[in-house]
Length: 67
Image (cartoon, rainbow, N blue to C red; front, side, top):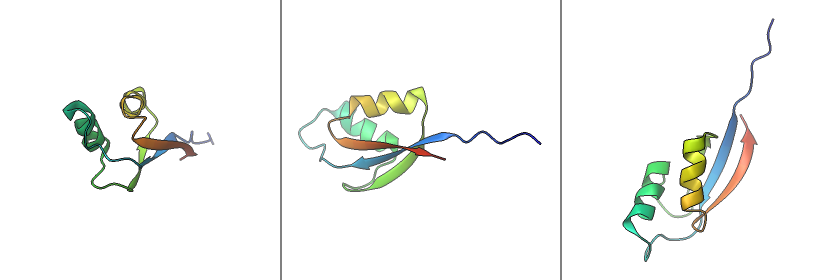
């Protein structure tokens, strides 16, 4: 029986307000799935999500988690 490959996930926490930043950065925060400051979400570790996190890296904290 083949072992199931575990997918990597990112645990992302929104730690700084997006007030005073561009609309694009605010939209990226929403696109990641955040609703309120201090919220923690998990997303799949894909190049798309990595790029979004990179654009708002000054507003979020990221930890890698094995899924």
